[in-house]
Length: 152
Image (cartoon, rainbow, N blue to C red; front, side, top):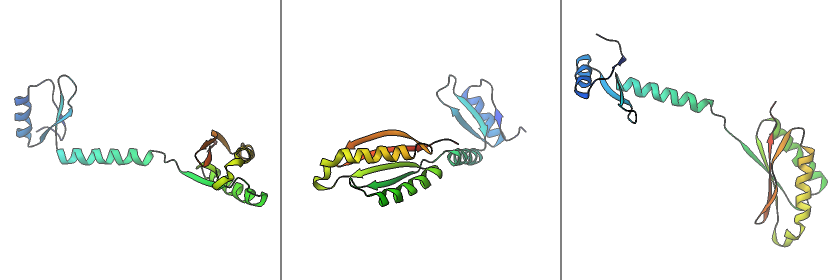
């Protein structure tokens, strides 16, 4: 009797099925697009279990991107700016991306230059911790800018 996995050379389908039945295992098609299609004789439940285990291991190794947001007004005063800058520093040191935006309410859209200056000032203050991924861009009533943390 052959072990759990039996790799077959180039057999035709009836021979492979007969061999699988004889070993009381399953004939599993591994690569259907290949010519000829690749099949293995193995225990199907065990194959599924191993595949789920592999997928779970790959998923756990994948990096998850966390985006933290900081909201400013076009006329944010100095104290509020420093307070929010402190939070931005904390987010970047933890390795999260930062989305800073200025939200313009009502007619405050006329101060879009002030909003852009505010975001560029923030980028300049944080340049040793992160790099600007996207410069300030106006989208509707909000001007957004993305900063990603620098690699250590």
